[in-house]
Each structure stands twice: as structure tokens, then as C-alpha cells.
Image (cartoon, rainbow, N blue to C red):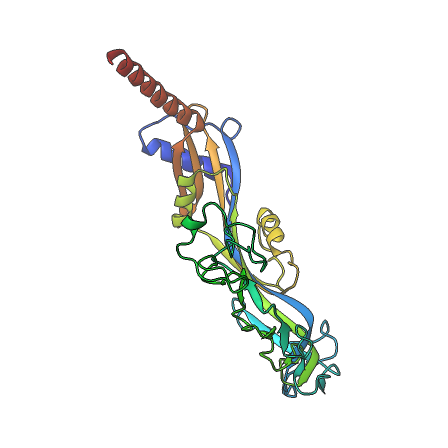
Amino acid sequence: MLNENDVLAAVRQHIIQRGDPSPVEQPSNARITWHSLLEGEVLRCLETRTEHERLHRGHLDLSGKPQYDSLHQHTLDAPRELAASTTAKLVKRGTVADQACPCSNGHVTCPRCQGRGELPCDPSAPCTNCPDTDPCLLCHGTRTRTSEPPHDHDQARNGRTTCQLCGALDAACRTCRGRGKTTCATCRGGGSATCPNCDRSGTVTHEHCAGTGHTVTWTEGVIERRSRTDEVKWPPSGVSFVARQQARDNGRWSTTSLTRHDAVPDDLATEFKKLLRPHLKESKGEIAREATFRYLPLARVEVPHRPHRVYYVFPAGTSLEVVPVLSPLRTWQIAGAVLATAVALYLVVQLLA
């Protein structure tokens, strides 16, 4: 693990190598912040168990299906591949009912026509060619002529024919011939039409058995196993991206792999134990787990006489690596200078415009 003296010595050496002979302050002056980098993933196999009442229309042989008495207590083999998804369907012992449907033959009386096969139908329909005009200019579809033809009778006679009700010449609609109605195209005037649900048979397929006349019911237990991978990255923020990337590429990381039954290693540093334990809490339905972590100690050093730099130190190879980055103060100064330059340019452009 890192200690203050080693960290300060590494930072001091880094500064001297870059041409600054001034020493790095002692620990009481330099500010050291300790970070524990932790990366990895936790692969979990999660299991759910549910029961459903099942219905099969027709014959079905369930003798080859695995059975159970208590779904909660039923045991399955441990998963071979945690990342694989599996579904096991079982039959609850003693719940299979293989029986004939009450309809007996798969058909029931048509509810629309009540078994008659036909539906009442108006033998006539309103004429579509004279809804806005009289079917007959003289009797108006009543068989009784008016005392005199309308004053525009001569103009309206064109396109008219003899009325079948009152016999007036050139007075009736050519389609309905004065009656105001035409023969129904569906029943052709017969007064009844074929039932569209049963096609005149009077019966329809029984939905409950789908026309098979037989059903099989049972209680089905379903055991589903699904995987979930949780990515781990600590700390989520607070460490320079550049420093973290250098540590990821060059750091001397320690690794550990743990299953659901493994305890956190005793020789692991206390801070890493605290970081690992929250990620190893058992999730709902968890039956197996594989966790792989790598961890690296890292120190953040601020030197008072070099306020524009922050130094990150971590183990790398056989020594400590130092990664200098701009301090937040310096970053804000640069950002302010860039903003001031942009504002000045904008004002100049406005003045010249």
C-alpha cells in the first residue's frame, strides 16, 4: 500500500526531473487525498418462480413433463453458464384434468341467430337515387295523385318513367318507379338473410375447446433464470480523467474473483473491503454470482508552492508513477482567459461592423 513518505518522495523526484529544484514540502504542508480505485463487474443469475393455470384445447400428453409438489421447494441443477437464460416448465402433481368438453362435438348454437341460420331482413331498402327528390312527381310515393302537377312538371319530366303506384307518365324515378324503395340486395326481397356468423348452419365453433370437443387443464410451474451484469467503477467522480486513464493503462492493479459463497479475502485492505461489500449484497432471486474486481490505491497531492498542478501517484510496475494535471484553479484561469478573449473579439467585430 502507499504511504505518505513514498508518495511525497515520488512527487519530489518528478518535480526535480522537470527542472524545479525546490523541494516538496513535508506531509504537514503538502495536502494528500487518498483514493481507492475499484473497477469490475458482478454477474448474477436471478431466478423467478411462478404458477399458472393452463388450458389446452384438444388432447395433450403431459406424462413426460417434470412434476413438482411445491414449486418453492423444487430443486434444479445449479446453472452451468450464468450468462445463459433458461426457462423450465413443470406440471404440478395431481392437477391434470383430461376431459371431454360439455359441448361434446366442438360446436354450440349460434348466439346471433339462435340456431335458425337466418336473420330477419327488411325486404326493401330506401331508393338511393331519390333521397332529395320525390319518387313520383304526382303521387309522391303514396299512390294518390295530387290535384294538379307541379308548375315545373314539364322541366322535371326529363329522365323520368311511368309510376308503378299511380300510373303517371314520365313522373317516377327510373330506379324505384315511384315506390321510393328498392328490393333489398341482401335477401332479394325474401325477408330473411343468411346468418354471417354460422353461414346458415345454426352452430358455431365452441371457443372453449376450439372445436375439438376436448380439453386438458393443469397447474404449470415456471422457473425462469436470467442474468444481470452490474458494472463497478469507484469513485464515480472526483479523480481526473487523465489520471484515471493512466492508472487504468499503467497501474499495478490487484485482482480478486468471488462467487456467491466466497467471503471477502482477509488480507484485503480495509478500504477495499468497505468498497466491495455493497456490491456483494445478495439481490432478490439471486442463486449464483461471479464477481471480478481489480483495485488500485491512488494518492492526490497538492503542493502549496505549485498551485497550478495536482499530482496523482499510484503503483506502476516496480515503482510509483506520478501524473501531473492542471489544478482546478488553473483550469478556471485558462477558461476565464479564453472567455475574456472571445468577448474582446466580439466587441471588436461589433465596433468594426
